[in-house]
Length: 183
Image 1: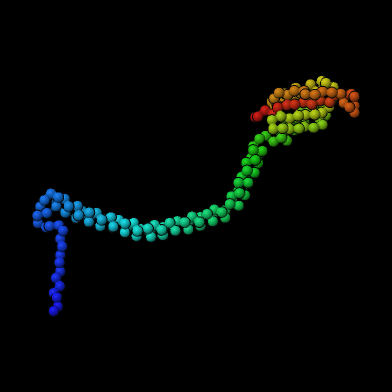
Image 2 (image 1 turned 180 degrees about the vertical axis):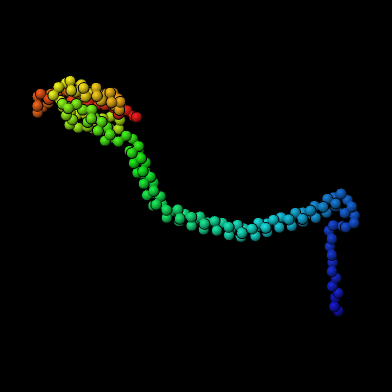
């Protein structure tokens, strides 16, 4: 008494009549098209998932390369600092050596000084010279100022201060200012 098992197949979409109708054709097209769309989408998702491993490996390599280059740059930081300091010193030295040496002006001033004029000090600034000295007569001081003016290396030569000497009343103490003209 074994009961025979019967298999029942239920088809909710009738095959022949329904496929011929407009709704049946649209439904058949939609089901077959969506199946293709789902398969293509799954393939894209799988490709993206698998490419993630490749991109992660590249990202890791790039991060490692960056950290190595950072270490190299950090190791040269002290050398770069010293180099910049030396470069600044070289720039300062070149500015000093490119201008006319101050000793040239001192030599010129002493060569233009009359025999009766005695110099106490020569003070130089960036663009001017202050000369302090004394003389026995005003004519010698006047001659000294004319000599400085006619030399061509000084501009705006002027007598700033004149007074009688404290130690020697016959001496005249003077201060002359002269601008240095660029050649």
